Length: 128
Ligand code: MN
Image 1 (tube, protein in one colour):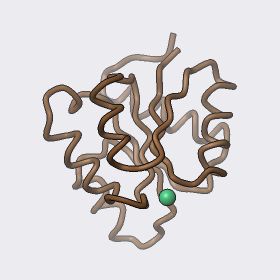
Image 2 (cartoon, protein in one colour):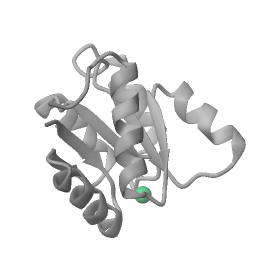
Image 3 (cartoon, helix red, strand yellow):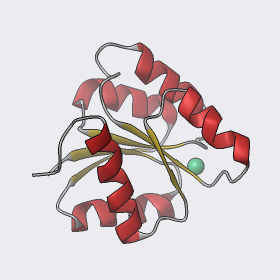
Image 4 (tube, helix red, strand yellow):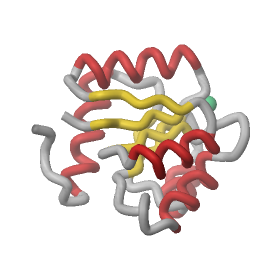
């Protein structure tokens, strides 16, 4: 079981993501904008961060750069959630420091598999 910070401003997407996370036996921590996401990442040190790239205050790119620049948060697997479909956007998201990338709309099994794959690739091991 992981403690997973979800940074997402859309109530509908948040509700769906929390449901998937909790249904899979993980614990969800919620932040509704970029600044709150950064604060909660620092304070809670979650096992995984899911980061919406379109936030109302600061961009997901800026959140990712901030988290990856700090020793206290840079080792937390950081996965971008985005509806961006243009081919250059994935590279831009990964260049900002995100460790992986999941496209919306979120589909239950694919989402969990992609999240686990990123964490495993980083050497954090499977969920227990
Ligand atoms: Mn958003």
